[in-house]
Image 1 (tube, rainbow, N blue to C red):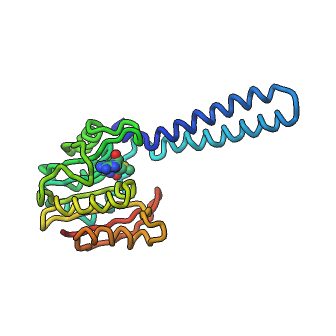
Image 2 (cartoon, rainbow, N blue to C red):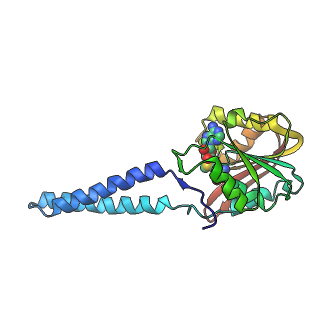
Image 3 (cartoon, helix red, strand yellow):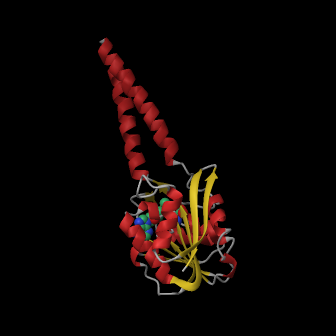
Length: 243
Ligand SMILES: C[S@@+](CC[C@H](N)C(=O)[O-])C[C@H]1O[C@@H](n2cnc3c(N)ncnc32)[C@H](O)[C@@H]1O
């Protein structure tokens, strides 16, 4: 297996798996006892356990931890001046899917930095070493730094291209806006910033495309490209901007 991007939402899904296994076990035991009500209850438990457990099991491997899922990153990369980038900063790099997805568009001498809190309570295996290893397997030497997206440990005006892939929606609204301000602070004046987001605005009533575009603009960027793309594995919004 070339890559390992970890297992997403593993705790929640593992809890569901344990609960459904228990339901099946209890249901199977009850089924052997007398009484229609007991048997009905037992059948209900077994059916619920099998259905819920099967669903949790299939979600555990969705997306498969070994699959880069490049399409969405390629769509973002196509809008960014990656070919001339000497320094890339990927905010919320996680286990490195976004670094891997952007790698083929970067010049060989580009220095990549991935910043993340590397919270392994959400993604099993999330850590700086795994991100580095995955990036290296895609031919990209990346430095990975543990840090908060809202307080990036990166100097002002020092990065040619800043990216934030699938991270802003995971943050509270205020932290997401501070993260965008940090992207603006660290991006060189002639650099570029790219966001790849899910259609999940903090304001549930907002149009997701306008929402992410406006958040980027609110951070002081000039938005140059907005794309709303529908891929086999879901809908994504791309916003590209200049400081
Ligand atoms: C869905 S993953 C996306 C990872 C990667 N960019 C990708 O496209 O696969 C979201 C990442 O955001 C990170 N994250 C969450 N809160 C963060 C914060 N405050 N600062 C930095 N990273 C954060 C998580 O640890 C996780 O690795």
